[in-house]
Amino acid sequence: MILRRDHIAGAAFVAAGIVVLAVSQDLPIGRLASPGAGMLPVLITSLMILLGLVVMLQAGSSPPLAEVSWHDLPHAAKLTAVAAVTASLYNTLGFVISMALMLFVLVYIVERRNLFAALAFSIPIPLATYAAFEYLLKTPLERGLLWF
Image (cartoon, rainbow, N blue to C red):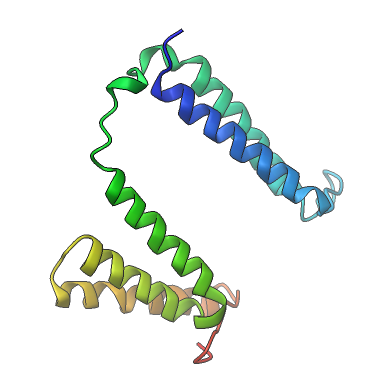
């Protein structure tokens, strides 16, 4: 059997789904009429596992893994690193600051865009998102150091 790209992708989705199911077992599932906090993770990860299996079964049409170009791997590693740092600083810095910094780093440093374009993008987007969640949806986001 030739190992193909979709074999790996499907297996990754199945493995991630199993990990999320294992981690979310302490949440109450509840009943269909009164779902608990664990109902949505179980439904979504079950669907993710099922679709991962479908991707693995349909892998015959994808290119072999040996033919996959890995030239985007450094770029993907940068994006993953920025997302990991942002996630680790989210509780400390809060939503607005952490998201503004993440967007700025991604646009200006990783993608090498114009400084003013990066600032014009990375400042209003988190502010508008924060306002939408805080005032329209009445869902508080992490406030962090500067209380916004």
